[in-house]
Amino acid sequence: MAVHDGAAGDFESLVRQLRPWPAPASLGVRDMDVTAPGLDLPPASPQPLQMEGALLSTLAREHRVEGVAATPAFVGALGALVNAPANLLENGGDPVVAPPLYGRWYAAQDRMTPGAALPWFNDMNADPRFRGACGLGTTVIQAEQQALMASAWEQVDGILALQEKYRQAQLARELAERVRQRYVATLDVETALLVTAPLHTRVRTSPSTVSAVLGRSPVATGAGEAQLRRLRRPLGPLGRRQGRARRGAAPTLLARMNRGSSTPRRAQQRRRRSAPRRVSGTGAAPGWLTPSMMELLRALPGSWSSSRSRCSCSRSSPSERSL
View 1 (tube, rainbow, N blue to C red):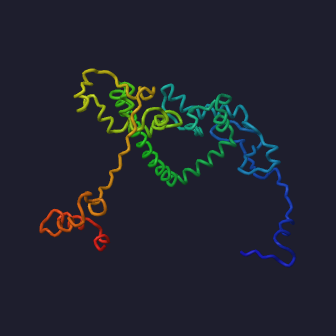
View 2 (tube, one colour):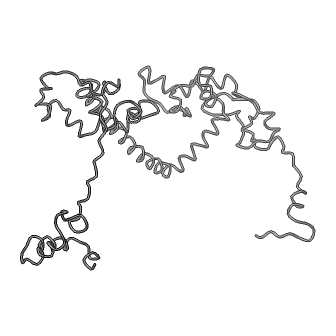
View 3 (cartoon, rainbow, N blue to C red):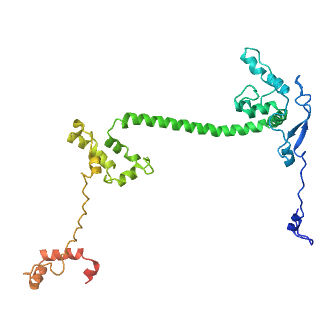
């Protein structure tokens, strides 16, 4: 339905005409007759109890009864009735059916004990007002149990997959710990640091990774590279030639670098190769070779000068040959 402004005013003027209405004390409250609860129980109260709903007026809140509103006689008789299954099972008797204890699985309780721990559990099961609300909630769950169970199983599928990932993570953690104890923990500090070099960018020692800490240290960049690790292996080709495996001494290269007593030389820059001087052109022939002698040499068939000249022309650029 469309709303349009009329000739008498707009929407704001209509809203300003609204006036508050004081809600009575009976709004959100229903009288509950508890004089004949049944099951040979005494009356819970000689007067009707006020069963509250989800929405209450301010006056109803002022007159609400906190805690258990039932009589002590009713609470005692109800407790003996709902506690009978647990008492019989504890004494070796046959199980019986009794009124339910609402919230027992959540509270992990099988008996109602007024005044004991978990007051919410005991008050909820001792007061007829609260038991009535719990019964209505149970009715809704029973009517929708198929849809609720289907939704619960959908959640369980995700939980099972998450648990499987968690078990795999636990297995990976235990395997990594066994590998560390068997292979890494037995190494000296420097060897362990070199063996674990591929992991330095992923392991944190503080806010920074191991790789960042080594980068700020005096240790030269590339000390943990694979090429150097292969050269430094005691059982590698170079290590066997040097007899490092027989000596059994712990390596000290990184420690000496960290102290500054061993500093690698910087790679020398390669010298640029000078371009070869062209054979043809000024300065190519010796000073005693006159132009007339050059002409004679060129005239000789198969002479060194003519072949040299042809080679020089073949190596010259097209622009030079045109000149």
